[in-house]
Image 1 (tube, rainbow, N blue to C red):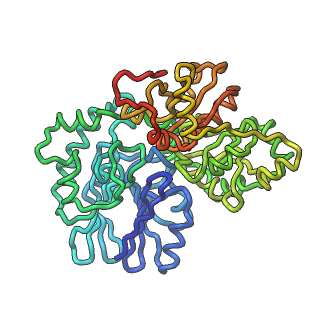
Image 2: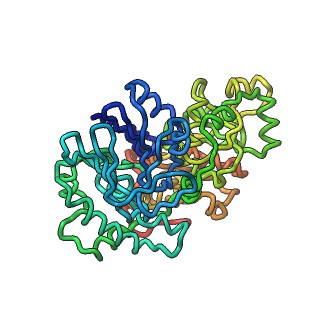
Image 3: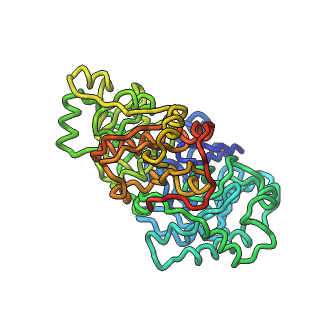
Amino acid sequence: MKVEQIYTGCLAEAAYYIESNGEAAIIDPLRETKPYMERAERNGATIRYILETHFHADFVSGHVDLAKKTGATIIFGPTASPGYTAHIAKDGEILKLGKVQIKVLHTPGHTMESTTYLLIDEKGNENSIFTGDTLFIGDVGRPDLVQKLKVEITPDFLAGQLFDSLRNKIMPLPDHVVVYPGHGAGSACGKNMSKETTDTLGHQKKVNYALRANMTREQFIKEVTGGLTEPPQYFPFNVLMNVKGGIESVDEIIARGKRPLAAKEFQAVWERMDAVVLDTRSKEAFVARHIPGSIFIGIDDNFAPWVGTLVTSLKQSILFVADEGREEEVVIRLSRVGYDNTIGYLQGGIAAWKEAGYDTDVVKEISAKDFDILYEMDSLHIHLLDARRKSEYDSEHLVGAENFPLDLINQNMSLIDRHKKYFVHCAGGYRSVIMISILKSRGFTDLVNIRGGYKDLSQTGLEKTMYKEPTTML
């Protein structure tokens, strides 16, 4: 028996490869099918099942495409109603895979169809559980996402269902059972996930707040529903794609998105298609030189989730600038969250853009040390925007800083004055450069990025405060 976790850091998502005696099962695959098919081929195995723990919100699953290519059977738990051929398993149903068995445990709560898969080894021992978004390491799945599509299914109702699922289906399992969750720290599908991506159930019973033995149903509902932030706007659209199916193969999306465009053609397509231009290079490269009007979202950070948060339509035509050799990676990572309309990249990059005679722009920057000096001299006339989330700002912030979270920029842009000069910072510099690029594309001109963000600012002599009476723009 072989169990492999396939972890994708930018989405904090875990897919799984299970193999026994020449047969394999894939759990919660991402959009691209090649990694799973190559694993099976290397091992001389046939993919028999594709197990979906639920209809995902934070990414588009590759289950339909993978099933077409391999002939594998798509499995959902009870109550699922997909718009394509799949086996809807019964609670307690046993799936045979080589010499092992996979038991279906219906565990509603995150969603109504949420299902945990219990792996039983060759000797009949309960070995591990693949919990999807039901149980994380240090947390449980948030119960409020379904309401984005079905207002009658309230978070309190789902939280109650989750309490029952955990107590009746998961916690009675042996302590040695290994927990394999669907996500780790950084995912928006929970609020308190550990950086660890596996653990034993016994240890989770000791340390996971939601598994306290003396916890009442009412306490559970209150704690699980409290402190939830608004999920990224793309989540409901990804759910519908996963429910309905009928979407393009990732192979077609890659072929279209990897189209190289010379600078003049790039400019012409940009104007004709009313496309968004994403600059996916490092923040340092974007700051030094970029195409005026382009939006920075660097691929080496939380690229796809930020695209999903800030680009409000999945149908938006997208052109992009990338480091040479990373073009296909950009297209794949966009497709993972449903942005399938990538139409080409700038061949030759910024150097080719300049050679063609087109203008470039820079981002003004200041070091944290130099900002400290400037702030001490004239703090009353300095406008400082903190681009971090409200929870980060509330934890600690600079005195006088205005909280203007990046994730809410599209809703709140009217709250800032395009005639003022703003200094902008986040935690380390990634989000502040994104924010500045968006504001510049909307006509704001006097913006200065604080290099190193709050990490560097907190080491200066600037006065900081914990949450008391913050200045907020919301």
